[in-house]
Each structure stands twice: as structure tokens, then as C-alpha cells.
View 1 (cartoon, rainbow, N blue to C red):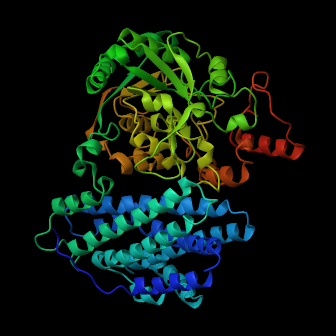
View 2 (cartoon, one colour):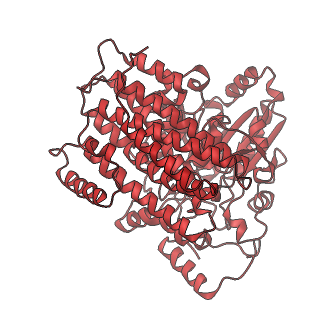
View 3 (cartoon, rainbow, N blue to C red):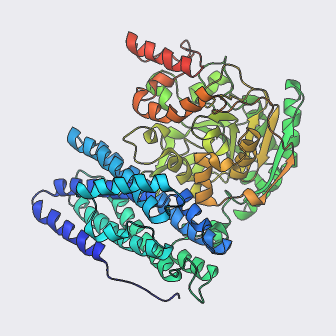
Length: 622
């Protein structure tokens, strides 16, 4: 056990006084007290989600003389606290933006902005010396001065808004996390008295209280492990720090230090990624069969059957392709090839599987067009083989409590109960994630994705995708980049002139498959993708453990979302525009086959004109 070290906590005393004042002021109005606390919480959560951000901590650690293994342990511990704080901030904002009063919603947005500004300014002051970042330090100093004049800087932290040693930084965060835990404890107590709040909301408040206590323990550990010289104290080792951090929670340590259940997770373990290339369309089936044989699908099924104590023939298999973003048979660049899905199902049956399900989830398109159920869209695009059954995951969500993530409490039953899970993605570009491959294709396994896209969402899109994968990951991953692959700015939803790479990818680790395919799509560092970087934080970075068998070179002529200056600019603004100015997705729907999927209503002329303008900017058919 690393020796304890602690100093008086003026920050905590000051915050306890604030809580007491609020409790006295609103002793007869618990709803208003709860609202005030949530407004305090969102500003604080946003502040620390900026102050703990991974790239900042990574740069700070790189300037120390700490051993790389020690840096990795410290970085990972703070990185998971950062991911938690991000989740807390977005959940709290979502709760406040669903409030009936406009004033509360406006204050929530302003509090989040204030927290972001304060987080940036304080992180610059505490982590960057003047000689390293003179312009940023000057601007941060002005920001802090303005905050003091406005009374926004607590007296207990004013002397900490300077360059701090890592030890001093961690000691300050111990106090910050303790105040956060006190806040969420009071929020949880108030929530229990308000019958209009659901059990799920109460559980999330309690979870945040628990998370903040975990963060406090992590920063206490780091503060007593480090000396004032930014080195470990004598006798302290990386393994000792990792062991104590793991006692707080497996996710706070790198994958190699986690317990066996988490360390052996299918995502992030690396391994061989198989890549094959065919000559023409006629070779497709043969090339795909050779890939399935070479990539060890049969042996993966055997291992899954052995782990469950049954034969391969008793395995229930779920295949998650991508076809629900398909709008028209004229553009199949966004759907997994049904011919290949049928070939996969036949291969599974040849290896003994008797129950094969093709599963998908609905999306925002069914808000605007009829006949957009999974079975209807599947029939339209030719997913009609007798070798599998089609399942609508949206219609069969069942309750489930996840160990990580927030705002998700269900999962598709067929995916959950499957003995062997396969994701079969379509290669596409993405304006913010750069690529959309196997991990992205797993959207829809849990709740509907549009619940996590707009301003009032209670979790980010990456959290929504990754949360179900903690307990229900794919056992095998395939990527279809054969006949058509959508590149350009918004390939994820459509493409006028798709590429024909004639490639297929396979591997047991979906994250590893995505990282290889992302490199081939012109992104040298796959961690530039927000989704893949988040996946590495959750499950471990497999980069050093990946080996490519087969084609390992960029796709000729591939155009990513940052291919031109205009597309780069549009990529930067794509998500804010979609979130706030897309009419909840209606303006971004490409040309739909309205004979098969008739519109549910007629938009006014101005809305139709706006949609045509958006689609023209995105180079999509209207």
C-alpha cells in the first residue's frame, strides 16, 4: 500500500457551505434545489472534462522523466476519469434541456459553455509554462482575471491557477472530486423524494455519486505516489500504482493490468486481420469463401461452442450487417451486400449452426417515411434468404444494467442471447469519425441511435455504441468493400460515385479490423477517429498487436471527408449543423425511393428548399 499523504481541503469546506445555503434556501422546494444543483454540476463536470482531456495529460506526461510504463498507467487512470466526466456532463445537460422551463434550458447551455471556458483556462495555467505556450497563457490569464471580476473563481482555488506539479494537480483534483461526490449525493437524496423522476434517472444520479468517489480515490493514489519533482516517490513502482488503481476499477488501468474477464475481452486484443482483393464482380463469392476459410471462422465458432459447453450445431448466431441507412436501390454503397450475407449464413450452416439471425435496428428515417421497419427494408434490398431469419432489434429491446456508460438500459434480445456474434459492416467515410466500419455498424444493438444525436441527448453517440459492447461484443468482424464503398464527405449516408476497392476484411477483433481498414482509407493514425479512439480507451489499443495477412496498402483514389478545403470545413460543422439545424435529421435524408417508402407528410416549401440546399452541399442526390 502506497503511504497516505493529505493536506487540508479548503475547497471542500467552501462547497459544503454552498450546499448548506442551497438546502436552507429551498427547504420547501426540493425541485428547485435539484435544478440549482444540476446547474452547478454541469458547469463543474464540463470544466473537469476539459481539464482531464487525454491529449492534454499525454503532453504533460511526455515532458516528465517518468518511465513510459508509469506514464501509461497514470494517463489511463486519468483518461477514464475524463471519459466518466464527459458522460456526466452530457447526461446532466440532457436532463436540464428536457426541463419545461426555457430559462432552465438556457442556463444549462450557458453553464456548460462557462465550464468549458473555465476548464480550458485552468488547464493552460496548470499544465503549460509561459515559454511553451505564451499566447495561450496570456489568453488564459485574461480569462481567469475576467472570471475573478465576475465572482466565478472560488477563493479556495485562486492560488492553484498557476503552473502545478503533477502532484499538486492531483491533490487539487482530490478536493474537486470530493465536492462533486457531495453534490451528487445530495442530488440522489433529492431525486428519491421526487416521484416524477424515473428509477433509471435516480440510478444514474447514484452512479455519478459512485463515479466521483472512484475518481477521488484515483487522484488520492496518484497524489501520494508522485513527488514534487514529477517523479514517483522512492519505492513506488508502476505495478504498485496499477494494482491500487485496479482495486478502484478495472477500467482505470491499461488492458494488460486488468482482471481476466476484462483483459480477455474480444475488442482490443489485436491479432491477425485478413484482407483479400478480387479482380472483378464475378469473383465475389469465391473470394469471400476463401476469406472465411483463411480467417478461421470455423475455429472461432468451435471455441465459442466449447466455452458454452455445447457443440457447434447448437450455437445461436447473430449477424449484424448495415442496411437501414439505405434509401434507394440506385445507391447500394451504404448497405452490406446481401449476396455476401447469404454466403456467410450458408457457411455458418455448413459449419453446423442451425439458428442464424440477421439483426438490425431502426433509425430516424422511419420518422419521415412509411414502411421503414427492419423486415420491410430487408425485403426491399434483397435480404430474403432462407438461410437466416431477419430480426428487428428495435422491437425486441429488453432491460439490462450495464457496468459502464450512461443513459442506456436495454439491449436487443437476439443479439444479447446469441452464442456467436458477427458484425458485417460496409466500408464508408464519416464526416466526424473519418471512417464508418465494424464498430460504427454496431449502432442499433441497444436503444435507437437518434436518442443520442440531438441537443437533449443524455449520452454521446460513441458511448451509445460502445456501452452494449462491454458485455455483448462481436466475436468476429467482416467489412464489405467489394462492389461499392461510399467515400467523400458523408459516405455514411450515401455517395453519388462510390469506389470499387474489390476488398474484403475479416478478423476476430472488430477494433483491429477497423484500424487496418481505416489506414487503408487514408488515415495514417486510426486514433484520429473519435469513435475508434474512444473504443481504445474503453477496451485497449490493439495497434501493437495487429498483423495484416494479405493486402496492406491504401485504397487507390479513396476520398476522405478532409479531401478538399471545402469538405474539411463542412466536416467540421457537420455535426453541429445536424444536431441543431437539421430539423432532427429530416434535412439530411438522401433521395428516398418514395414508391417503396412513401413520406408520412408533406414538408412546406421552405423546408424542402433547405433540404435540397443541404444535400447539394453534401453532393448527395435530392
